[in-house]
Every structure is written in structure tokens, then in C-alpha cells.
Length: 359
Ligand SMILES: NC(=O)C1=CN([C@@H]2O[C@H](COP(=O)(O)OP(=O)(O)OC[C@H]3O[C@@H](n4cnc5c(N)ncnc54)[C@H](O)[C@@H]3O)[C@@H](O)[C@H]2O)C=CC1
Ligand SMILES: O=C([O-])CC(=O)C(=O)O
Image (tube, rainbow, N blue to C red; front, side, top):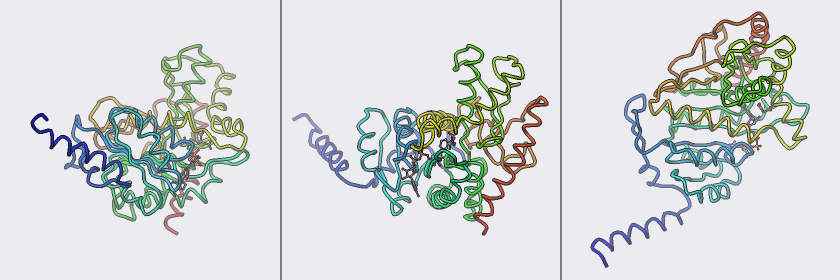
């Protein structure tokens, strides 16, 4: 046997044994990121640690697959109250770099969250035909509260991406939980509205006869009905639409979620396009953490671009999470009227979320 063979064999046996151990232990600490300051250091050599809460669900599973494929991820924690052993076993066989660990049920939430750089939350019930996103509030508000309490305790410096609906209220709920825990940093809390941008890019590209990858549409406001406000006057590449096109596109973008809910006829809401959107947004957050420049995405965040405490608009992502909230830019008359409707509904949804925690 070559020199050092015994040591190498021992290491191989340890790796086999570690696979047979049910829960992660000291291994989690080995895959550590550059830490120490309030912000992450550029060029984190070993990759980022990401947790998905609600990982066994319709969004969670394809999102887990996409995050396992992301070369910026070194450790992927999959948490849910059901089915994580199966999902984790399945995903863990993919020969990509990220190490995958599964966590099942509330007693394992803290282990799932400890040391994470990014926490993505798609946990919660989806809509059925005839429901609004706000109809999900009663169940999902409590789920988001519990999960964010775990974040506050175990990884208060993590970036949090909130997907669970109604996003217009669940993000304020998360903020209130963090405030109560004394860990709130508005730069680290982002509501995921990327699917609205993804849809807007697709539908606008269809009308213009362009490749959707070449189209960029800012979508501001929030993530429900009239609060989804596409800025068709700011489409890139620059273009103009007649009033019929504006009406068709605005309605289709605002109703994109309902279009999928109805097509699925009781079997849930958008999951695959959402997983794509969430993975795209998470990747942007990770590239920001790495120190890449020029990372701009729309997101629903604590904001001063309007008089409301939360609003979705373009934000620049960096090593500390949100580095800058960009101004809305010039709006046309149609968009200004839409903004008034958006603000009225958003104000109520934000207040409902805040009241849920303070009651
Ligand atoms: N922000 C956005 O653009 C979008 C948001 N959504 C929302 O995402 C949420 C999830 O949707 P789907 O994945 O389709 O639902 P789903 O029902 O397929 O999956 C939800 C998962 O959450 C898990 N879960 C429930 N309570 C939990 C808890 N306390 N801790 C951890 N996990 C828990 C469930 O076990 C399930 O696996 C819904 O609220 C939906 O409305 C959906 C599409 C787009
Ligand atoms: O419509 C829903 O309930 C899910 C969702 O938020 C979306 O697809 O945009």
C-alpha cells in the first residue's frame, strides 16, 4: 500500500459513516463562508450556505433542484414539515458541488438554519380557483412568523427571500418578527416578486416578437392583483405600445398567477415558473454577496420610494444585501393612476401584517 494509504482509507470510511449518520453535525461547519464583518467578503472561496424552508412543496422541490445546480452554493439545507428525507435523498444524488442535508419538522428547524447565508421561504398553502392571495393569510401568516423566529435566533445575518403569499403582508410580518427579536436589518429582507418580472418579460416579448431574454420590464408595487404594476413605459429595449396593448399586457401580467391557478384547476398555483424565478432571484442575491457589481432586481422591500413602509421596485444587491433602492423613474399618466390604486391596497395589506404580530 502506498504511503499514507491508511489515513486515506480512514478518511474514506469516515465519509461513508457520515453518509449513514441521519443528521448533519460538525460537517456543516467545515463548509464555511468567509465571515467576520457585517458584510461578506468578496470572492467567498467555498461557496454560500442556503436553506429552503418548505422544500418538499410544489415550489420547494424544483427550487431545491435549481439551487443544487448553482455553483455558488456549497451547502443546501432542505427543511419542511413533511417528506424531506425523500426529497433530500433524491436531490443529493446530483453530481453537483453543493452538499445537501435534509431537516424534518419543527425540532430540526434550528439545525436547518444555523450558519445560513441565505434563507428562501416558499412554505405555506397555495391558492385554489376563486381565492385571492389574501385568503391565504390566516394559515401562512403563522407559518412565516414561526420560520422567521427561527431565522432571528439561528441566522440573524442571513438574507431572507420571502415567497409565501400574501407577500404584501408576509414581508411586513417577517420585519415585525425581526424587530421584536432585535435582529431587524431591512437590507436583508426581500419579498420575491421576480415572477411578475419574468411574466412581464415573456408577455411583452410575445407582443413585440422578441426573444424574452432580450426584454426587461420593471414591475413595481407589490405582489397581488392591482398592486402588481408593470412599467410598460420603461421597457428595455425602448418601445411604445398603443392603449389596447397596454390594457392587454397590464391585465395579463396582473392576472398571471390567477391564469395558472385556474389552469391547474384546484391542484395549486405556479410552481415551476416560480421555482425558476426564485432561483434567478436567489442567484442574484448570492452574486451580490460575492461582491459582483451591477446586480439589480425588482423586489418588495422596506422602502422610502413612496410614503408606504414597503414597496417593490428595482434594488441594487451587494455584499450587505440591499445596497440601494432605485427611484421609480418617470411614470406616464396610466402608471400614475395605477400607482394610486396600488398604494391604497398595499397600505391595507401592510397594516394587516403588522397587526398580526403586534396583537
Ligand atoms: N411570491 C410569489 O411570486 C409566489 C408565491 N407563491 C406562494 O408560495 C407558497 C408555496 O406554494 P407551493 O409550493 O405551490 O405550495 P405547496 O403546498 O406545494 O408547498 C408548500 C410546502 O410548505 C410546507 N409547509 C407548510 N407548513 C410549513 C412549516 N410550518 N414549515 C415548513 N414548511 C411548511 C408544506 O409541507 C409544503 O411542502 C404559497 O403560499 C404560494 O401562494 C406561489 C407562487 C408565486
Ligand atoms: O397566484 C398565486 O396564488 C401564486 C402567485 O403568487 C403567482 O403565481 O404569482
